[in-house]
Image (tube, rainbow, N blue to C red; front, top):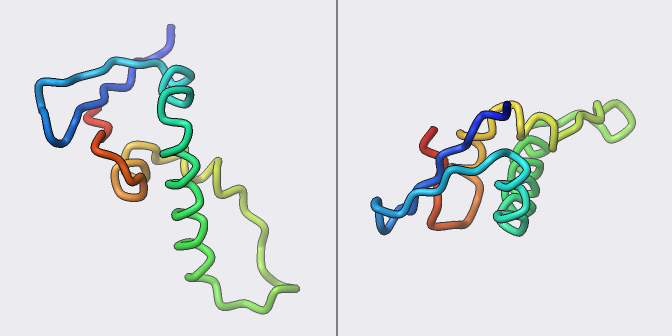
Length: 83
């Protein structure tokens, strides 16, 4: 059984969606792509090592590790993950 992600609208708190992770990825595909790219740019700006020494982390995996915080802070959308 997959856990449900509860999504709320910032403008209209009465609007509430309960989605599985796969449904969430499908519905918010563009927002997720933008949020992951913003997260990646933010994380890369913290690393001042020369290119030949830089680690190559999987930013998408790191993004999903703390999905709620990252989506709520990096996605340009009126929706947020409440739970």
